[in-house]
Image (tube, rainbow, N blue to C red; front, top):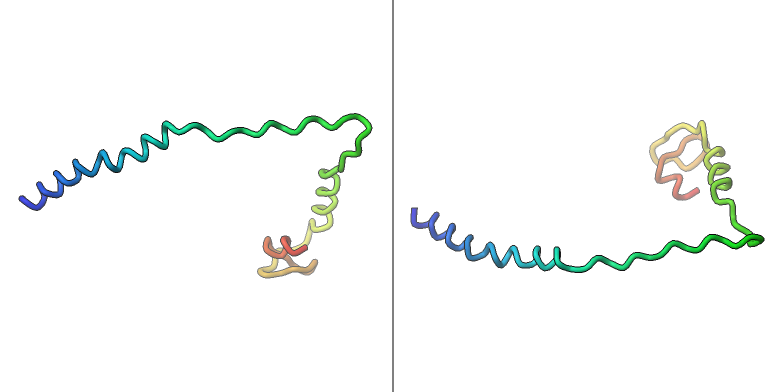
Amino acid sequence: MRVSLRLLRSGRRAFPVLLLPLVLAACAGSAATREADPAPREGWPVPDVEQRLRAGVDAWLGVPHRWGGTSRQGIDCSGLTHV
């Protein structure tokens, strides 16, 4: 019984110490947000990323999954990172 009371008392002393970092973190300000890039001006070339991405995806449609594969005979997600 005495041991459990000691643990309880030490826990009561430790609680404010453990709570302090959480309170300080909650009071901290948020990180600055970055403003969005301005829209491109007319006449400036804008890369068509979506079109290139779709062409890349279409090239691999229908290729079967193969563990560790890196070719059109079979490929997995790690193989796509090398393509």
